[in-house]
Image (cartoon, rainbow, N blue to C red; front, side, top):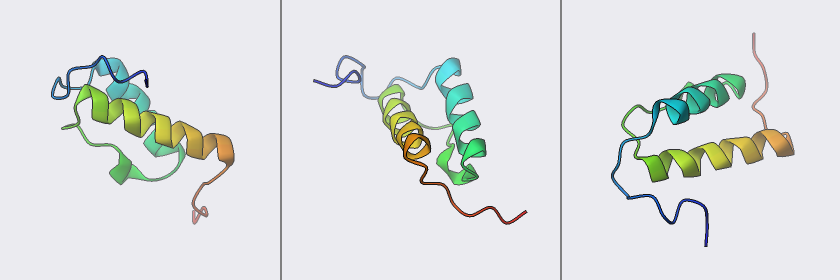
Length: 64
């Protein structure tokens, strides 16, 4: 069972999740990955996916 299994599906994401998601979205240069309307469970899954992409080095090419 994943770590998000105990979270109620529609609770809004926490401030810490929002900050982490924003930082990750900025780091991988995908601002659309940050969405203020995510639930706790949606934010947790998205954070996990972005962290995994960073770990694997799956970053978009830098254009600036």
